[in-house]
Image (cartoon, rainbow, N blue to C red; front, side, top):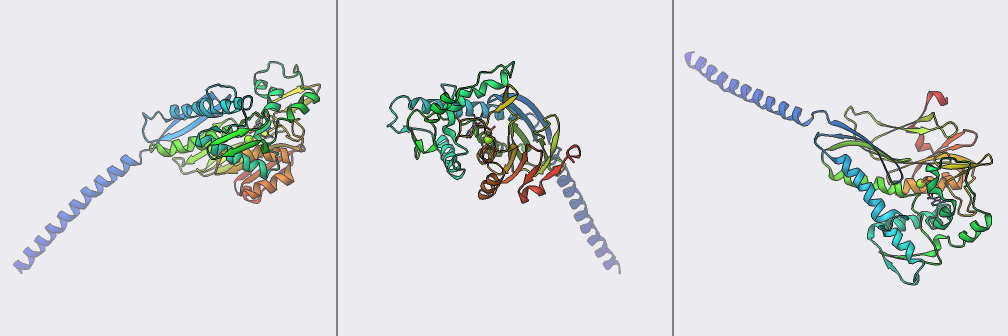
Length: 361
Ligand code: AMP
Ligand code: MG
């Protein structure tokens, strides 16, 4: 009996040691887990870059993170080194200059610029030239990039139709000859990557965020193009509001998205001048040289690729609803159009993300 009791006691001691061990271990685990899952800090920042407003909301596990500076730096160097047609430091500037010198020569370009241009060429073909980055001579004639700083938007001298016709001679994506990491431009073609620059920036920012392990979630807006990345600390979806083109102070609705999307919007309200009561906006129909008049006032595209979403928003604006829907479908992109009457049309897939706002109901 005694023996049995002792054995029990011994057994109980062993068991209690295990229990104490387990409790300690759990304590360490809980402590460690709590340490890991401390609520991420939110960083918000508003800047201007690429001639537009940049808004960053980032969730980070390291409160000393400087990722917000890295994002801005990424946009600025993309502009200065690759995409700007104005800055003589950029590759695009150098390519454009080559059209005025010996344009029978293939000019070497970086692999990044080459792959951006190859994607643009593909979309130009698929959109039947509605999206065309060789529009540079025409967009310069319209002085599009000065419009946002014009004091008086009605005191603007319109280009003449003769001037436009002349400049249209130097457009057409078939005038670009592209070989891997090389390019040549025929005639005096000038490239303008304004329709895809913001989207390319989103692709670059996404790559940067993927390398920053302290970033758990982010929403970054570069002008009209928005990247959702990772998760919000409370697990809820990212909300992206869509401006009502017929009343830009209000919102048409909201997209509820998880962290993997690029959202681009092209609208006639984003940049325009108004001469004699007529609005001239910044999205040009390459067939006429004049602002596109397809009946669309705004189009929003949702894809996982920034360049694609940005190119498609411009292309679909020019093409109008019917052809735009087809083009978006061809790329598996979701699209939402608003026409001049305020009617909304969207792809079936867009319906699961879009929620009409109460004011627009
Ligand atoms: P987005 O706001 O993305 O639609 O881009 C408009 C900008 O792209 C303009 O400011 C021009 O620089 C350029 N652009 C205008 N029309 C076209 C077009 N049809 N194809 C390509 N780029 C264009
Ligand atoms: Mg665009």
